[in-house]
Amino acid sequence: MTIARPDPGPDFGAVRPVPRTPSGLFPSGPPTRPTYREPHPVTGGGVAAGGGAAAGWLLLFGLLGTDVASYAWWTVIAGLLAWVTALVLVRYGDRGVATGVAIVTAGGWSIAAAVVAVRWATSGDWPLW
Image (cartoon, rainbow, N blue to C red; front, side, top):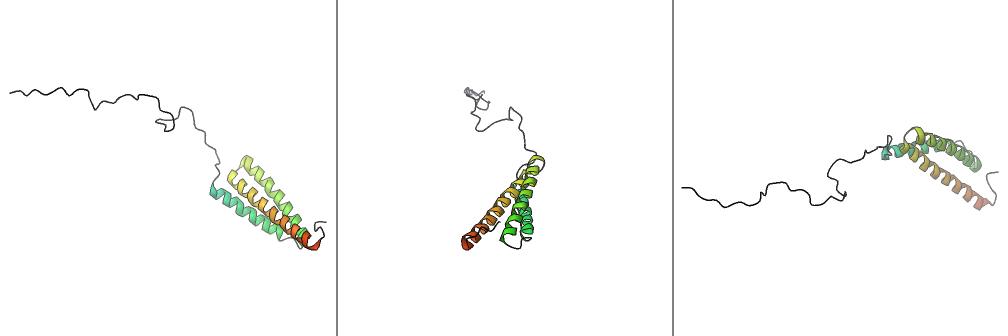
């Protein structure tokens, strides 16, 4: 005896085409254009290493000063040398290290300027000449 089965209708297991083009917010395949990567990406470790090196550099030069004026001038000279090094690193080396050097150098110059300003305010005499 043969049992008649009803027609199952459309095939529910078939893959249907996407009704519209996706927006691109969630890409479904590889990018259509090449993706370029920076050869020396800025990392937290590089910024910390540059900051530590610059802090040590400014500390060594600052210790050469015997009074406020010599401390300020040694800090300015050390900062200029550090910024030249940071510019070279930006062009040819690690940009993260250059960023750390530049940030700490700016902070060191700010400290030296504050020391000069406090001495000037308390003594009434400009300490750098």
